[in-house]
Image (cartoon, rainbow, N blue to C red):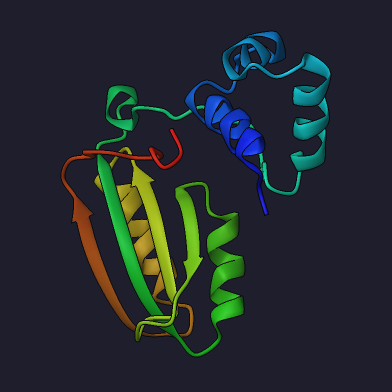
Length: 142
């Protein structure tokens, strides 16, 4: 369980992963050695990776879809999805669909190619949701 100080440190890191340990120490009124130890403790466990949140449409990736899948062999489908360059995130689910996929495409023909290959897998049912506008993302503990 996280103590209050750890939560403050991680919140600062969520706001700006490039923030220095000295700045986090100052903002949380915590010795820099404590910040270092807390981050070391959480590195690769609680902190999965340091990343950048991109505005995909500004990069020309305007086609975004969430796909809900029911698969007879979910692990095989997940292996296929994990290797595909247009797959952003994969989740296991228990809501009638056993896999949820977040995908991003620049061109429709790439989307159609992906969709055709996906349906060669053991898919029994799918639902495709077109994302038309991103309102908020990655804001929890921020």
